[in-house]
Image (cartoon, rainbow, N blue to C red):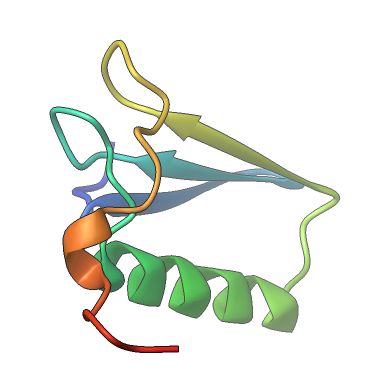
Length: 75
């Protein structure tokens, strides 16, 4: 298993791409995690898989977006 880059790991198994959230304990979608997800999805566009599986490490798939990433007063 490859190490997660900023909470996300991308692996390939033939025609299947697997994106694994690994940002314990809640697999929150922080700004760095979203940036890495965006990079991985862009990389998949150069060699598209037939399917993409999004999974997570631990008991929680994702607690959602980390509200600390929002700036007060931003529209």
